[in-house]
Image (cartoon, rainbow over all chains, first blue to last red; front, side, top):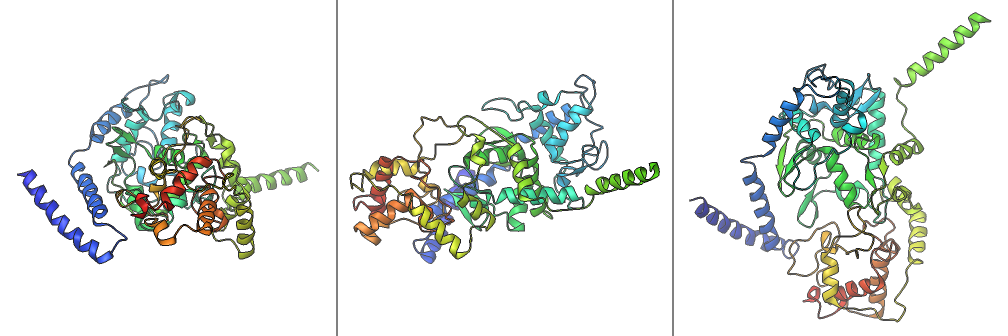
Length: 278
Length: 204
């Protein structure tokens, strides 16, 4: 039944694509248009079940488990809305924290809480933030899945009230437009114009609110091709790898600046994470 | 004397205390220092890659739109870097060229120094009609040679465009395949053939 329906849907698309192909001439071949629609169909099919749910559950367990030299849970962690408030917190990060006198993104704040509440050594907490191929998700990935899930549907509201938040945005903006490395790439090379693609992958234009909102709201995400929950810090890391830059240090100031810039551009969007991506 | 010292100390404290509450835009030097401290060497990708060339800095600061005199100076300097084929042979093997156009590896921290880099042309350009998975950051190059012919002038221009794209557009987004040492002279010859050889799939 499902197979029959999908065959008829494909026929319908094939006809539609012929129409589009004729309308736009040679600039967008019908075959390419058809392929992009098939990818979109695959993306929609993925939405049915998201393995990130398992990581949300494990992350919740970790959040409430007594761990570290201080044998404490993370339940009193102040993510910006007061100790213990998790709901809606991710959507308001990065932000300035007076106790750290710094702007911190979620992952940096999580490490701050692991260090201060649980007594875990900072070097240990930040050693392996990203899981490798075929590995179980790291604690940071599972905890991130749990916390971001509690912001699903919350409006993105990255503050610019504090002078340090403004400074973080400005530095992040400079980094976004900074061309460097052997390929002369900046973030803006791929993410500064409408409707750009690498191969068939559409690239969000962070100069436009709507595109920025859609992109920012969908991270962290479960990547099917990698079988892993990927955080925002990972997202930047892998972009810089492909841009032929050196590696951004996990939760470094410039990475937080860049996430602040992207977050402010995305303000007003609605968090929809963890999402699932191919 | 003592009271005066106290007043001065309180005043200094007030200035320092307020500094974090009053916004002042970070200078470029401050920003670059934060950026430099936030990246690390990983494999072949070292932090010296953060040191911008003049062209990279100008294109970043002007959002790829430098004043005309600066643009012309940068383009002239870029053209002067181009090394044309030593033996006067412009075209290699278009089949090899297609492989180079399909390959995206090279110069990432996940690559080894001895991995030959690809051109990754399809990431941004349409080339042959058969490959439908192509990007659109650059213009379509389908029928590149068929539309332009293969005069000496076209070959020379195309070689220079691949070697150092900034020769004709100071802040072009394309990598400098020859100038930055991404592709070898032999690889560029093969990519030239992909674009200009009448038998290449690009020109069918």
